[in-house]
Image 1: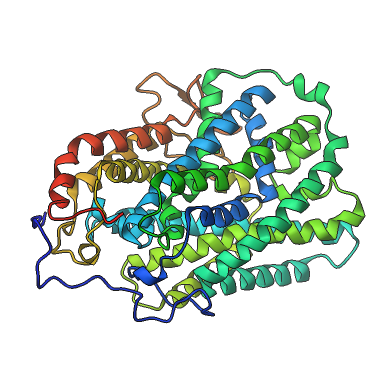
Image 2: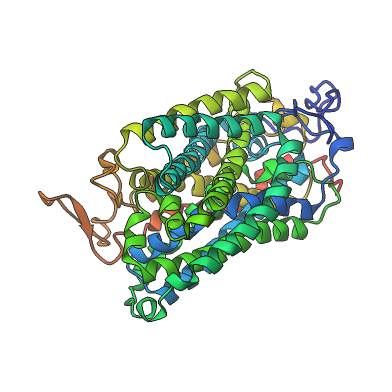
Length: 515
């Protein structure tokens, strides 16, 4: 591991800065990549963070989680408690990560180099990139399937041609917005927030007649272990699904911005809509078995069928735009992550590369995959373990630090953050291995490639694998609780808070907070 100098060397390279670029709020295309945002461009306020987080999470896709939670075997009240706790806490954790953006004015995966080392950061960077690509592709797929469902319901064109056109058009919108960059996205999100919020309220009003409280109230309660499993699903599906890009949207914040305000606006923006949407989704799914079953194949399309014909087109437009909004956030950040891994291309080109991958993934799933929700949920839990371990490590690192980052050292493996921080890298790897042993593939038939997990459940007496000819499954009270995600988060935090405190203090020598 590289030694840690007490202060920056006079001959150390300066941090790459956006000062020499023309990225201003009025610029058409943001050319700034992973370099440090110039002081003159740090004009955002904490409340500005509300717009990208709210717009990306007001999507009606959130209602589909009502079906997923009830599918976990818990009651309406249990699911409501789980949803509120899981959504709020997970977005609050995003808020903590966002503090690093204000302190270092760089993307999340660059700031994470302070904890993992300039080269060591590539380990979580690859996981982060895969997670972002998966999320944005899932949102694009949902938008395409919703388009096909609405067109069919209206008796318009259907079939392969509609799917192809929808896939290409939606991918083009996502890629174009992400290539234009931060300032354009922020303007788009502020407009979408009002439009989507209004249409979502209209959807709720129109579908209230589909709610039958007596059926919802009759849903039997589940066990505490089932509630834990549902909690993990909510946390990974909401805040933890975004946590690896949280600082990307706060790097334009003024250094004087309050840490508490940044956490608060991230949490409010991210959780306000999902809490309402998930609870409403619980009421709809608990009232109608067809909705409960249909969401697994086409989440948004199933919800759209509850509307009268006159409302389908406006609702479809807004539903697609909300899904696109989330995908834009994801592809913008996945492009930054790609740059942080050492890919030397302009930021717009990196976003375009990810756009090609998104388009190919969308076409593959829409035309060739029998189901995407099962494999996606399986993929989500699998990557959720190392992402949770990384998040625990970085959160502990951020809360332990008392100074701003040495910006030049974030780009220099010889600097105070070193090339590889083996404590963090080994912690992430070991904790992930432990975590994978405590999660299972709940979609064994749809995603058989993921049946290798859960290897610690039987030795610890938490579950038993049953290789039934009709389909393998796990049995036991804790088998489907996915404890590995929560354990990875807690262990990553605890090990870092204890084992790296001295190293963090050494890294901070000669630095001072400018906030």
